[in-house]
Length: 547
View 1 (cartoon, rainbow, N blue to C red):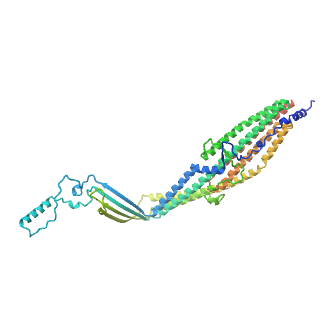
View 2 (view 1 turned 45 degrees about the horizontal axis):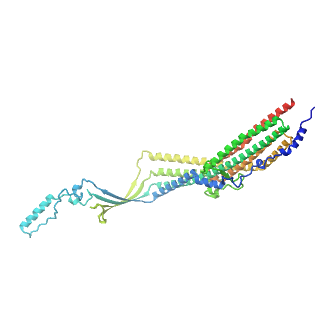
View 3 (view 1 turned 180 degrees about the horizontal axis):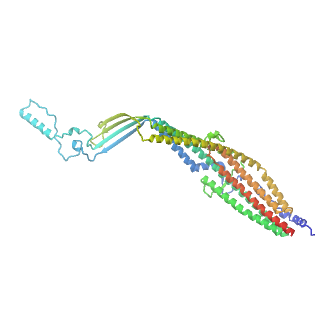
């Protein structure tokens, strides 16, 4: 019976202890927080600065602000219906040709006809001699025969070349069945809804930026973990290669170390690709170039609260879990108010409307191009109009039915929004509690896993353990580090979501936490595959030993 090979291997291993004592660096076991000083050529970016840049560059916030401005315009337009309307006008007309020129009001420059003789009123004078009296009588008859019968209308506007008109029009609605008041309520509700939408978009932007920032920070951490795990695998491979050269390890152990090292390379490549995508998304939200080099200086495990207070219209509502204060519920309430006012407008069409109007004008027909003050004449009218709908063919009834249906729908949507907000609030609080519990549970796991890996590495160098134990320790360390990083990221996002909850839409932030969970599951899903290979190899080794 031959002697067991382990004592000889231990003796030769002791001789190589100084050469093989290459402990894994502490940075490979426990990824440190982001350095306070970014590398040269990179832009240091804090979360607070990222939030500020995103607000200035967000198209969604700009669209919401335009909606607020539009709603204010609607309010001013609705309020103007309560006030009197006064309009002024000034017109000038030049007549090039007129059918009334022959009536004596034509062009003063018309010289194609001989002007009629100037005739005064005939007054007989008995004191004159007979001959003179006959002459005056003949002249009067001649004037009567040749005079223009329409010369008396010469001062009227017919056929005048120049006409000037200045006017003022006044109108005031006295009664319209409450339509004006309802339109004002609709405009006020629209402005309230636009302001809620603006606050909601700002809160959603803050949550999106926070999520993108910590996703990028998490991708950095996962790249560091993957690279550290690859470095550990390369260290194990180098140790196994040296042991193989001196005869302490068989070729099978060397091949296993090479396979484990090579299996880690795709994960490193995938982590780097995920990091590039995360940074691209962050740069897109901040309106930065896609290739911008950023160094994130806010660590994942930052104990300070996420700086989202300035994105709240009322800081006292930060973290409020009251359903009635949720933005979707408030918007649904304004929709109900709008439809109630619309129903009031539909019913007001059955009532009479009363309005007062007045027209005042000044008109001049100067002989020249421009009038003088004495050329103007005045026109002034005052009136009142009463309109009563007698028969509309069912139009008013149709408008009422449409308004009633819209009101019923708005009330039903309000109840839906309340139920969804109640469930969403509970979900957000549950996620926050779960994130805190996961973060606290992972507090000491990384240190324990790192210590276990150090022990397993020493045991493997000393020849008292196998690569299966070392690989298992490496996998557990990688899982612990990834779980800690993902838990820190999820906690930060859950805290931001809980703080902004009153202003967020229903379901905001849930997709982001799901993506973080998927990142966490990647190393866990790869762990069984990595463990199955050493287990099968170990079984083959026992079979070979038996043979």
